[in-house]
Amino acid sequence: MRVDRRRALVIGLTALGAVPFGRAWANAPLEILHGYTAGSVTGQVARFIGSVLASKGRPAPTVRAMPGDHGFGPVAPFLAAAAGDRLLVADTLTLMMNGVAQGKLSDVERLVPVAKVTNGYSTALIASATSGLKSWADVVSAARGRGLALAGSGRLSAYGPALAWVAAAAPGVTDIDAPGNDRIIEAVRSGSAGIGIVTTDSIAAVAARGGEAPTVLATFGAARSLAFPAVPTFAELTGDRHRAYTFSYSVFAPPGSAASFVGSIARDLAGPFPETLVAPLGQLGTRVAAGDAPLVRETMQRDLRVARSFL
Image (cartoon, rainbow, N blue to C red; front, side, top):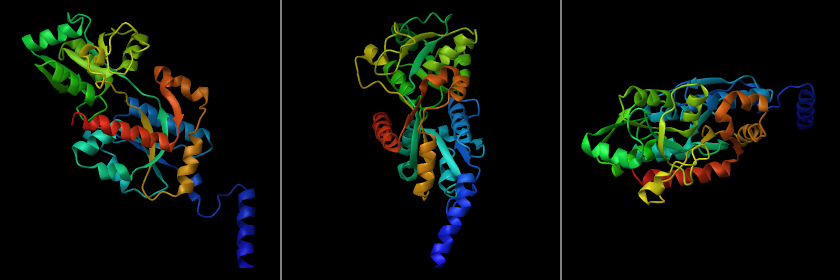
C-alpha cells in the first residue's frame, strides 16, 4: 500500500509540474565549464549550448571560462564535481593531445560523452598581406634564410598538429604563443610573427568586420576549404595525405552521472536548433550540428590517432 501511495504522490506532483523523486537536476541550474577565454570559439560554443538548454525550459546555465593548460584546465575540477550539476564543453582533439602529452588519458576516459555539437573546423596557415610571403615555397625559403616566427595557440591546443607539421617541414620556423585567433592575426598583421595558424572561419570573420584579411597560404583539412577553393591543402603541398585534420566540439558529463541526466541533456541537444540561437553565431553557425554520444566516442578515437602521430 505504501508503494502505491508513493506512486500516486509522484504522479500527482508530476501533473502539477513538480520534478519526480531522483530527478531534481531537471530544475537545478547547471554550470558549463570550458578551457579558453570567454571570447574564444570555445566560449561561444559553450554559451550557445547554455542558450539551447535554456530554450528547453531549464534555468539559464552559468558559463564559466577556465583558461589555461592549453584548454585542459577545467578537466580536473570537472572530474571532481558532483554529478548532475555541471557540463564540460571541449574540442576532443585538445582533450586527446593533452591526455597523451601529460599522461592523463585515464582522466579523459572518465568523461561521459553526451553529444557532439559542431562539425569539423579547419585551420589555415596565414601571412600578412604585406609580408611578401605568397606561397608555401616562400615560407620555406624565408624560414631557411632568416627564420620565421609562427604564431599559434600552442602545440597542445587544437592548432597543435598544424604547428608541428609546419615547423617540421620548414626548418627555421619557431613557435610563439598567441592564444586566440584575434591575437594570432594581430601578431601576423603587426609583424611580430611572420606566419600564423588560425581557423578558416576566423579569417572570414575578419573580412566581415572590414578588417585587413591575411593571405591564406594553406589549409589543413582533407579537402580544400569551400571558403578558399584556390588555396591548396597542406597535404597537397607536402605530398603526405596524413597531414590533414579537423577538430570539433562536444559536451561531456562528470563520471557517475545518472543515465537519466545524461539522456535528458542529450535529448535537449539533439537538434534541430532554433534559428534565433544559431543566427547570432554568424560564421560559427555554419558549423553547428547535432551528434550523439557514439559519434563523440568515434571522434575521440580519431583525434587520439592524430595526437599520437606527432606527440
